[in-house]
Length: 555
Image (tube, rainbow, N blue to C red):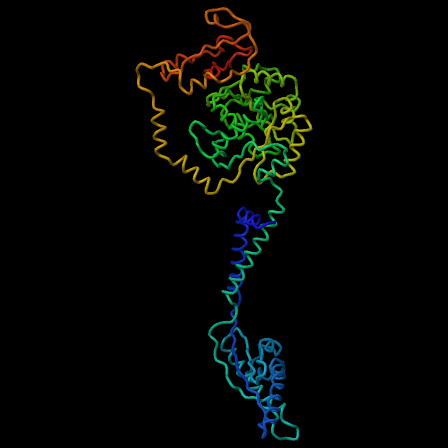
């Protein structure tokens, strides 16, 4: 791994590092607060020998004193001196071994000074123990250095400095513990972040998805918490990051196959809760926004959600047609969004896979293809059931959803394999619920959602026109788009005579061009309220649910 890989891991998993650091610091602080304070009192002893008359004798005496210092440091930490000290102070709650463990004796090299330190929970008792220990050692050293037959001791010990009452405890060292906890927390957090990244087998980037799927990435949909309450995006009013992501995906769909772009598409995922239904709904809506006639089929006959999210009747629909209980024209429902029709799931059948794989299902899909420019099918997850695999094999292909940070590499690979084994064409993949953060995302929202002047200009442009003469303009952009937009394929109909069909050629669908006008009266007159298709109807008439036919369906 290179440096930028570690930086990427830290940027993606900084919460692990932060939490680990905070826990380590709090642990160090808690340990410091719970530890009993320890005070330390210290004394200093001076070791000397009898002075000699010559320089050589003095030198020999100093060497002897230094040798005695090394031995005295051992005696100072022994239990014999500790017992004598306890007897002198009359302490019975401390054993000689415990007191010996509290005493430390040290000496600097080439010196005759011995530093004695005693630790205790009480500063006063630490002082008393240190002074009593030093005094007793002076007596003990005199006894040890005095010859048996009497005479002067070969070495003597003097208390050079008595202990004072300590004010500041030597333990715990809170600042040191906090610094140590901070350092340990950061290092441990980085190690956990790198380990978590190495063990994480979920898909998060374009490269991984394209390698596993063997096809390109069609779109990346950011996480939008609003979609949890309202799955459908109103593309006429919204310019959010999610809306622009779907518009970008719409453009990519048109370039998947320029000569033969896919029109009947199954949207599926490896497992549930990966955003396939929300993606299918908004894919249909963004295509309808571009002026296409779109039908959204609720192909998930096990856990349907489209009818609930769009507020249409879900009791009759796809399964009703497949079981022969109703005709397709009887169950198609217009949605509240212009240009979008919905074929709900209907009653949940006991054998969804058999129904979706039947010849009747293929005929229904063919009829929808002939009537609409785009057919978007919300299918079931691929791994639990085979419904979407069967549907994808009978359509132009499938879009496979992978949820950022949840779909694993193995799950995505298995889903691709299941589709390929059935001969289904995988059009591409979509990563959903990607983290929506960063400076670029903020600037985008600011530009599109905070520009008050743009909002005012949009409101002024959408105000109704004043009554008056309206010119029949034919050179506007919308009129040119209407003229150049290709007609969706419909089965050829024989020529029907009549005043409205005089200009239609046999086997052709008649469509008289009309100039665009903003006159409300003209637009109301141009949109009939009849539910049947005009002039040259296809074998399927318009829906018989009493709703007004969409203007796009009248063309």
